[in-house]
Amino acid sequence: MEIKKYFKIFKNVIDKVNVDEVQSLIDCIFSAYENKKMVFLIGNGGSASKASHLAQDFSKGLIQNPNPLNRLKALSLTDNIPYITALGNDEGYENIFTGQLKIFANEGDYLLAISGSGNSKNIINAINFAKSHKMTVIGVTGYDGGMLKKLSDVSVHVNLNDMCMVESIHSMVFHYVVTNLRERISGVSVNENEMFND
Image 1 (tube, rainbow, N blue to C red):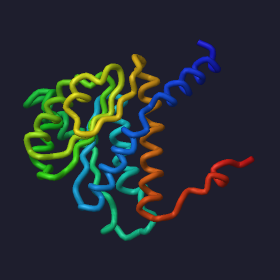
Image 2 (image 1 turned 90 degrees about the horizontal axis):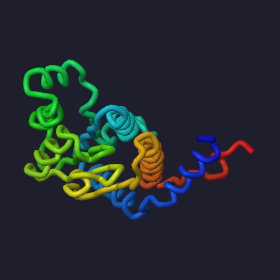
Image 3 (image 1 turned 180 degrees about the horizontal axis):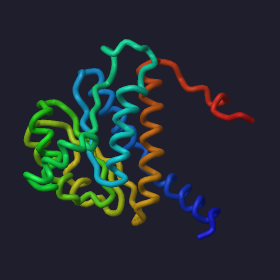
Image 4 (image 1 turned 90 degrees about the vertical axis):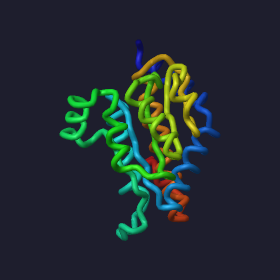
C-alpha cells in the first residue's frame, strides 16, 4: 500500500473516533486522581506495551511539580516478568492479571484494559474480577470490541479490523488523554503555536 493512501485511511479512522468516549475516559482518570485511587492497566502484546507506556505517562507525565504526593497512582500489570511468568506457569496465562489484582487492588480502584479483539481470556477474567470487587472498568478496544466493550463501564472503541492501525489510534488517543489531563490538573493550556517549528 502506498504511504499516502495509508495516511489517508489513518486520518479517516481518526475522524470516526467518538470524542465523547475519549472525554469519558479523561473524566474517569481525573476522578481517580481526585479521589487518590489506583489505576491498573493491562493488555497483551502491543497492548501490553501501551499499558506500560500509559502507566508511566499517568504517574510521571501528568504533573511537572516534583512533589510525588500529588501524582496519579498508576501501575501496569504487564511489567513484572518474574511474577507474570510464575502466575502463568502455576495458575495459567489466563490468570496473570487476576492474580495480581487479588493482591494489589481495592474497591473503588480503576482497571484500564487495552485489547484489540476485546476477547482475550486473561483480560476478561480480570474484568470480571474487577467488577465483582466494585472497581471501575475502562475498556479500549478495536475490531467489534468483543466482550470487553460490553463489560466496560467506560469504553473507547476503534471500529477497525486492522490491529496495527488500531494500536496507532490507541497511542494517539492516549497521548491526547495525557495532554488534556495535564492541562486540567495544572490549569495551564498547551500553546498550539509552540508545537510546530515553522
